[in-house]
Image (cartoon, rainbow, N blue to C red):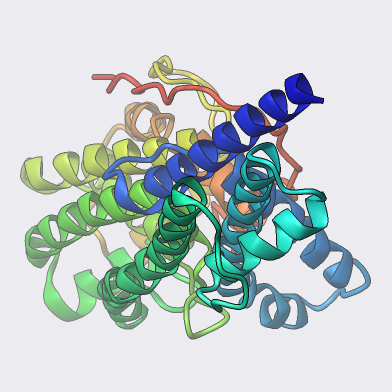
Length: 366
């Protein structure tokens, strides 16, 4: 019996430490480090939501339900942490000499929720009670402290996405964006737009990889999404760089690089597969017919286009290949609203395996 209590006590200690590290990596560590507990919780809750939406054919009905996914999971995660911490301390209390595991569980619950219904006996149990009470309060305090930061990042993200509606419609398209700039502002004004989106991409890379739940927070408008907005801007920049006959646009090229680095980082966090170093002539989901359709439409509007359409297509392909797979993968994973050249060709959500690995840093191709 003594050997069993020792083993159970060690297991309880490891469970408490494992849970504490999960909380630290999820909310405190300033980098994307998914943990097994948070991963299991998010996948399990996603499965419940998928069952609820399985019989719904209308996107707006499913969007109404799925909008609750991130908030519900974030609130459930601390509860799971508290249960695992309470279980771990109950094992420790039992190992220290409690007559039954139920009594140890009652003592753990009293300390964890600071109820004070059971008074510990002995110095060792008193110290454990203080430690458990402090850890329980700390887990809840970490979540509460991070909510303002999360919603601050959400507001910054959605402000820029909403402004895109004026320039590129809802759902956003690269065609409408270039057309409106040509007619209303002039193509030279695009030079003012690319730095804004470069900064936006840098912002979402930091916020959405540090706290993966940010990716699942949906826009207030069902037809808007941060991922389809990113796709429209990247396609517009790629088309301008490759096909529009204007002066060299280094800011657009930098914007594209910032965009695919951000999307790769977020896709990597969720184990969404992509080629980290694609060939410039690699396959993309946009067909030549779709590209030609955009070319012909903008030509009819009056947008100046480069004389060599074949080379322009190859250049567009060379830019799009850098973000094509992360963009399409994230659209399906996040159940993005219908949008051309992105979510309209995305595969449905596929439940990932519950496995852990160190994040890789995808190289940036030239």
